[in-house]
Length: 282
Ligand SMILES: Nc1ncnc2c1ncn2[C@@H]1O[C@H](COP(=O)(O)OP(=O)(O)OP(=O)(O)O)[C@@H](O)[C@H]1O
Ligand SMILES: O=P(O)(O)OC[C@H]1O[C@H](OP(=O)(O)OP(=O)(O)O)[C@H](O)[C@@H]1O
Ligand SMILES: [Mg+2]
Image (cartoon, rainbow, N blue to C red; front, side, top):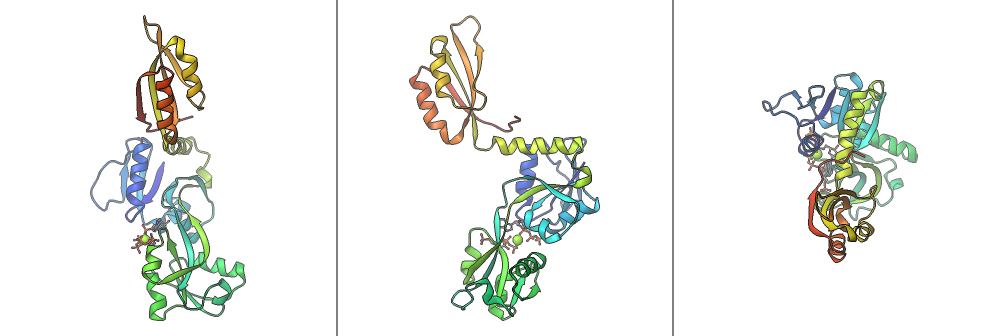
């Protein structure tokens, strides 16, 4: 099983970090390497540009890919499907034009020029809207093009909005919402090895925002403790050998930990321990 992952850029580190937490740590090798093993003998990675990853998966150079949904849409490959939203690299592709330039709605772009690194997504957007534009493909610094009269507007990525603001550009319309996805070639999507990778990655996502709470309590106070601990199939209760108390373990939402611990103490919980959860396989 080969997974294509970004070789550089802002998606490289979080992707390796996610694989690590999923139990698929990529083994360190020489810089600028093309391939690497993971600690799982059945899974290896291929390093590629974020934009090329859908193509590598479609062509069979890799079975699975991890990259932005925007890249998947732009590549227009067939036979490749999303399996999982990995919930990082969240951004929007937007149509933006110079502030105070009089271009405030998409229809204002009719007969104008739009520069972008995403020509396919951009053409699809304007075609659907029935607006006739000239699309100019650039490979970077898209935000500059309206200021050097290369284009009237741009379609580009934004997340915090800083880059647009610095370049005095205002959002005219949303074009596409994106986040990083795991996707597979359709002919391997049902392979058990793919299922294993999906389960491992999902377990990391499911553990995010959760904490593991452990405590001891007198048997007499167990009911009260169980009332305090919320959901997730209920707490696990273990007898403590030779004592009239039990150990209780439960998964608690990070947001609820503060209040839950206070409530637990109130109903007689002792030795309360809160830890992070690396993976959660339901
Ligand atoms: N500001 C951002 N916030 C969140 N996600 C982003 C942002 N910019 C880019 N992304 C996501 O990361 C992907 C890759 O962007 P990145 O800038 O790392 O690569 P690139 O500039 O296309 O790479 P290269 O340097 O190889 O051309 C984008 O397709 C998008 O999905
Ligand atoms: O809304 P913001 O938070 O400002 O983010 C938007 C910017 O982020 C990306 O560039 P990146 O930083 O990846 O640099 P790049 O042009 O080298 O890809 C994107 O191309 C925008 O320029
Ligand atoms: Mg970039």
